[in-house]
Image (cartoon, rainbow, N blue to C red):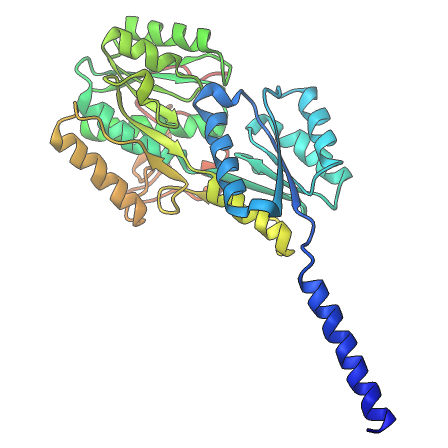
Length: 360
C-alpha cells in the first residue's frame, strides 16, 4: 500500500470518528424563562400560560430548561426581573401587556437574547410579539349571552382599558346585539388583572344593575363563584372554570399557548428564531372553548358551534361593517373588516350602542 493511500485512509478514519463523536454529543438545552403577572393558581390568564409552559416542556424534554416567575407587577419590578432573567437565559417570555416597554428596554441591552412579549405591538430584531384573537371568542360568547339573557342586561368585568380588553367588549356587544336587538352591556372596571375581592364586588354590582349574564376579562374565578351563588350565567376566562360554576358557566374561552411556546423555543434551539408578529385565533387553535353547558337550549348551542366553525374556516369576522363608533362617527362601511394595525391592535373606542362611559 502506498504512503499516499495509507495517509488518505487514516484521515478518513479520523474524520469519521470525529463526526460520530460529535453527533452523539447533545447541544446544551435552551434556557427559557417566563414572567407572569399573577399566580399560576388564578385558574385564568397565568394558569393558561403555565399550562402552555408545561406542554412545551413535555414536548421538548431535555432540550429545554424552564424558569417561571409569578406575581411580577407591571412597574419597575418587571424591568428588574426581566433583566435578571436575560442574564441567564436564551429566551425570555413576558406575558402581560404592561411588560411591553420594559421588555423592549431590556432587549436593547441584551441583543443576543431573544424576547417574546404577549399582547404587545413593539418589535425589535430580538423581540417578537404574540397574541390571540380573543375577540373571536367574545364573538361566540356574545351570541350565547344575547340568547340566554332574560333581563337584556349583560355585565362585563373589565381589567384595564387597553386595546385587548376594549376589543373584547366591542366584539361581545356586537355579537349579542346581532341576535338580540334589545340587549345592553354594562361595564365595571376593576383596574386589576387579579384581585378576587374586587372582581367579586364588580360581579355583585352588575347583578344589582340587572345583569343575568356575566363576562370577564380578569383572571380569578371570583365572578364565576358569585354567578353560581346568585343563579346567573357566566363564562370562563382563559381556561375552563366549570368547577366553580357547574350551573353558571355556559362555556369558556380557553387560551392554548402550548404549541406556540414549543415552536418558538425549538426555533432558538435550531437557530431559526427570528422576530415575528403572531396574532392567532380560532382558526390556528390558539383560541378554544370549554364544553357547552347542557342547560343551554339546543338551538343556542348549535348557533354557537356554527359560529366557531365559521371562525375556524375564516368565513366570518367579528368586526364586519357597517359599524359606527360610540359617538356615531363611521368606522367600517358595509361589508368592510378592519386591518390588524392600527384599528384592532390599538383600538381605543367603544362601538355605537354601548352606553357605558369610555374610561380615561
